[in-house]
Length: 241
Image (cartoon, rainbow, N blue to C red):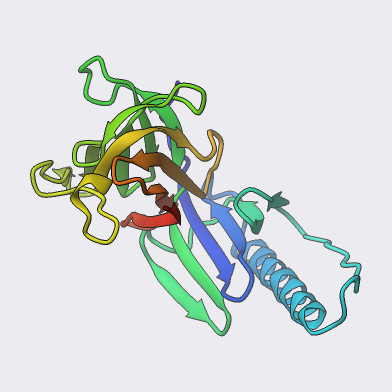
């Protein structure tokens, strides 16, 4: 599968409700006036949606609103799985990757798009699930399926973490890492499987490790990456004894 990344991206995210504008740098054709107007329209659309959501939050169950979305350019994307609303605008080039600016309740984040795929990232015969943007790459071993869970040791599940700007391998030492629930040693290994949350996300995605540990504690370890950001979030969710 191809690994080509799209160019520079700007993301506006409303803090209260997850809504995003993605601006992709494809070519320098559009003049500055059209770029500015497209961004203004997108920000205003998100503010309108945010206001409506806030109004509905204090109204009775079943309350409804209709919103007309009329953008001068771009496309509106609703991702139910990621719980987000997005507006993607092409042909802009305003922020360097990793730059984050907050404008009232809107966060603008600059950077490249991201790619998610399956590959043998180390050419060692082990298939991996991979997420990468223009700044960082994360690869986790592809192990098992929901129908066929296998043994997982979280101390060596991360195949590679690479800082792409400086070309530095940041993969953790397996002897010093692992996922432990309540500091219980055998909660770091057990049976389960790994998977990508989505194969076609272009701005935010997750690798999920589904684990039934030998400590009789089950959980999901979720590694999340966003386009334009040079760090990876990891959250342990759905913990059950």
